[in-house]
Image 1 (cartoon, each protein chain N blue to C red):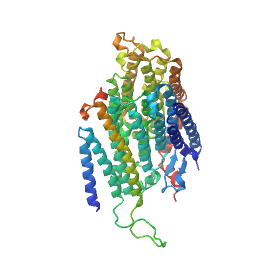
Image 2 (spheres, chains in turn purple, green; image 1 turned 90 degrees about the horizontal axis):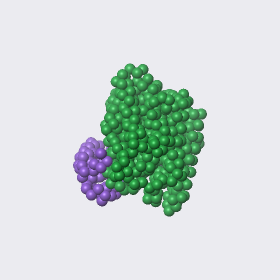
Image 3 (spheres, rainbow over the protein chains, first blue to last red; image 1 turned 90 degrees about the vertical axis):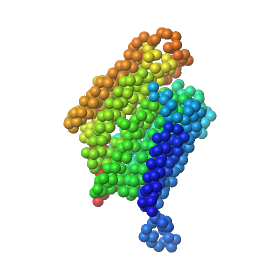
Image 4 (cartoon, rainbow over the protein chains, first blue to last red; image 1 turned 180 degrees about the vertical axis):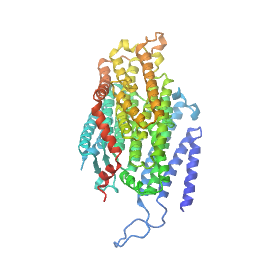
Length: 115
Length: 502
């Protein structure tokens, strides 16, 4: 499972960076969305993939299973997803406002601040 | 229980929430702005005093013991940074009263300012690497919103660059945290430091170190990752620029200092060598960029970049004296840089433009302002007896002692070019005659004496700090020395957080 995940994550990173290098600001935001998802998947995968092994103490108080999933990365991913959601919704609103004010969606023409 | 560690985070959060509750009342928001930042300053001094007495002040959130819960840790460096946050927050809050217009205030300027301060203080005080990421995001989101308040074209374009590069840096940081957790299985920085020392093969650790370096390097605006800074910092209202200039990049620098003294001190030859190259090039490109500019705040923005180079140089040389210089430099720089931005705001308010070519004659009309500009400007360039001289002196002496002649030459050259930039501003804005063709002088609303004095008040206060640091160099040097000694002794930090290990 892990090797497949590693390849998938790598492909998402590559796609995201390709999108971010395009000139359109819409594609830029798509790139940002993809890359934050890639990072979330990466954290999820670093803990190792365990199937059907929740980190719970059995009801009768017996010993836990030999192999259990690490709950911490899942908590991290949850936090990261929420943060990314907030930040990316801001980014989407920002590009919409920027498009309304500047009137183009081409990064090459956004040079007002460079002179 | 040490409440003083949590209070610098809680007070701005509470003040932010309170100002949200008084959304419609500008009066109350202003009042909370002043009271909240004053309380932050007071608690930060309390924290500093208690860190000086105890060495490390630690609080485990929720009572969970160290490697499992989130720990708040204040060592001397954190305490110094928090005190500076308090000073800058208070100064900017006072300065905001006459300068931030109704439009910004009704769209939540004050709540965002408090949130930004909470994020900055949180980043300085946390002892958990994932928590550091969370505080970074708190700070970034507040800064995004502050940056675009007003919604002018330049602000939008600057914000897109700022948001993109900072998000990219956050993602790299997050990926690095994920991989670090996968390798070591812990997030507490003290625990990470303890386990890193046990790893035998350093290859993966070095890769992670470089990922952290890139991520924090973007946030600190180090070469070659600084492009977002001069594109964005001159666009928002001056009070916002000043707050950003003083605090945001320094959070990145602080994170570099923390991570590269505590955790990644295994292969200094490799990591700190890269940092040293980065530091030299950061200084040089920043100052050369500034030389080409003719916009007041853009010159100052490029100088932030070049000054970051000095701080990184202190870290990269990694000798006791160099770290003292680095800490001293941060201390001096935050105050001076904020002050310069605040002065550029006063000039803008009086003359209606930031363009050096259209400015002039300010010294003749307002001589006091000229003197107030000279204090931080000469301090930035490193003229004795102001604070910048001692900061540069310590760093350059450290680099000579470490035998890095190249970086010594660069640091001296950059000091000279900084002086050139500051003289350029002085000559163009203050000294030369005001250009007298009609379209050169934009219309400005008359400024009441009361407002002018309210704007000058924080500037005078910060200038007094600069002179005080300059005249009492030894006092601050001792503090910086103690803090550098702590940074060079990671074991002390680990023991303080995790308790004595057998």
